[in-house]
Image (tube, rainbow, N blue to C red; front, side):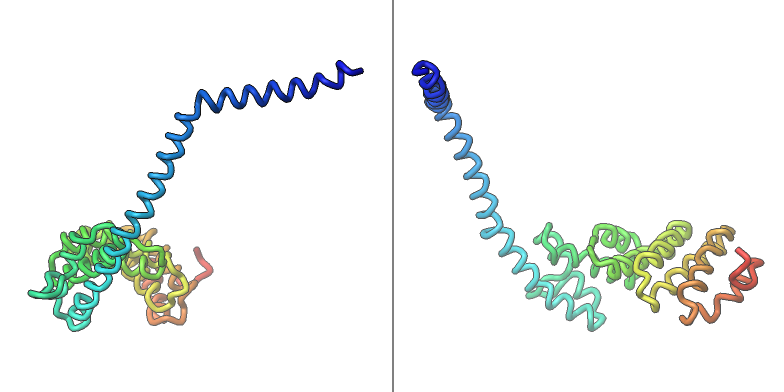
Length: 229
């Protein structure tokens, strides 16, 4: 009985001894690993506080004057800045990776589109990204405009169609995007794709300006009413 009572305790001590021996032999490696992890965390936090956040703040402050020039239709000043204030292009290059630089791509693309530099419009609009579906739809339609001006009508039609389906709650712009898609597809002889976009206008945006006119475009392609699909 005495021997049985002591056995578990002896085993327990043996496990403790093994753990202690393991710690003694691996202590330096474990401490080094922990130190590396702590240094990485400190580096990330420090970089964010000393580099990322100040850059975001400076970029955001720089955007103010460029946006003012944009609102005033001073597009070249908005793009290139003046002798004191940065334009969208400098904001993009100087503050790459910030939210403001990303937004500057959108503005720069829009400026180039209105200035007739369609290749640069495509470049900057493609570099822009957003989590807002409504803004994404607008940027996608502007990209469609640029491709259309470059006579790349098939690409433009696909972008307009995509924009029109991206944010269905926008019952003002969505039917306009869909109509542009349908009209271009019709010009390309892709009547099936044209009908698909005209039908979406009829089904979802019947009370829009395009909705009131869409029946004649459907009829032109041989479809009368909405039941015969």
